[in-house]
Each structure stands twice: as structure tokens, then as C-alpha cells.
Length: 117
Image (cartoon, rainbow, N blue to C red; front, side, top):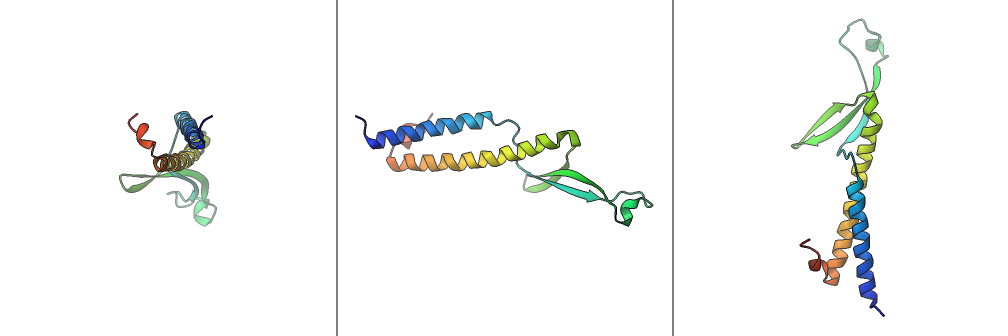
């Protein structure tokens, strides 16, 4: 019969490898926020200057080198960008779960057995 702590350790290790596999399956991860915006154009007599602005246009805001940049998202790419942002949020959830698992393994004194792999 196995000890309960060994069973728990094995369950933590299995869950960790499941999360690693899920990480590997994440495709187009985009660390950013997606939003819509309406705009006015440079044509002075356009109806957008009278309140009927153009849009909505979709943008993704991404922080790079400590600066936020906004990129226009072409219509054909909107769903892919939305999926990429969702995958980024899933990436963060997985990272939190892996941290919790590693802390539990550390408290059991077995994290060092696997840390150098």
C-alpha cells in the first residue's frame, strides 16, 4: 500500500504535466487588450464630424518595452486576435496553477527532485 503523501505527490505531478501539455497546445497567444473605437476622418465635410463617426474599429493594445501601443485589427483578423487574448488569459491561469502545485511540492520537500529537468 502506498502512503497518502506519495499518492498526493503523484497527483500533483500528473496535474503539472497536464498543465504543461495544455501550455504547449496554446497557439496564438497575444498579451494585450482588445477594444473597439469610433473615429472621425480628415475630410472636413464628412458626416463623422456631425456625430456619425466611423466604426466601430477594433484595436489591440499591447505593452512593449514599457510603452503601450495600439494596433488596428483588420476585420478578417478580429476573431483570431480575440482568441489570442483569451489564450493569454488562460496562460496566466495555468501559470497560477503551476505556481500553486510547485509550492505544494516544495512544502513536501520534493520540488528539488524535479527542478533541474
